[in-house]
Image (cartoon, rainbow, N blue to C red; front, side, top):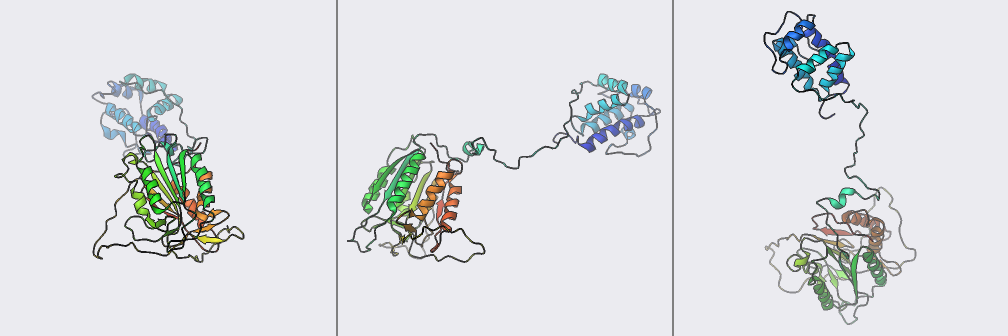
Length: 418
């Protein structure tokens, strides 16, 4: 117990102090001068106490009082010893004196003391139940300190921000890549449009845009005034590929087969290019392949839950890797990695691997993302939910896929819910 060792041992020590006082302040050891705190205590105790203590005797931490000098000094030392045992020790000591028929001694101590002791308070010796969970919960189940903590982004505006969804389904047959139609992408788009509206975003969707048209839409959003808003979301549903990069891997294709690097898209919204979003979270969700590799999976010691749509035809958003044209730095040139704060880029798959999509139910990634947001957006922060998305997608059968993210957020992010 904080402030006093008033447990069983402490109380026992206080009770023993009564006997200790009676035998320590014995006749024949009368003080010749008074204690500052108890002016006339020496003579009074001399007239009332008797008994001779055993030399050098100690008990439960109380040293021999004779070594303190005069009777007044001995009494003062006893009080000091009691005070070291907690705030309740001296009141308990007085109570024990009265209970044992030594009420006159207790009254004398009170009269001689400059400051009266606090009234005796009952001591609660019941065990204390400790809350081992650092984050307390309110009635809704949400951690109380999660939204009020310094390390949580504040979302107070309504709508809380803009959400732009770029959905490329049909691709030009004139391009060298001959990109296939992305069946099931409209299912993804409808899910996410509905989901982000429910999360208090102003949602805009654009379908089948060429690369330059995608860039114009992104720039239009980045150049808007976000001062009255709290965050921004960009969702891209398209074919993708590997590409040379410094910051964020991968690229997405316009319907004309021209790639746009993810890092170029993200940098449209950084603090330099979009001042009204400085210090505010900027979230990017990319449903596109990161390469051509097909993950066959590895054997594990436990059985993952089976989760596969029966009869679904699997498609990928993969295209062959193409390096960026133009002069590249020499091999001894070192590119530094800047720190784009308040940015999170969530990828549907690991860089270099394909991302799977089914015509009837949409992509694995968006299906899991929508389900997790529906169930947990009211209580969990974004990174926790993305872990659950990764776990759900990785449990799929046949080929394997694992989503991931590049996180440069400085705080935890909680969505608003209607």
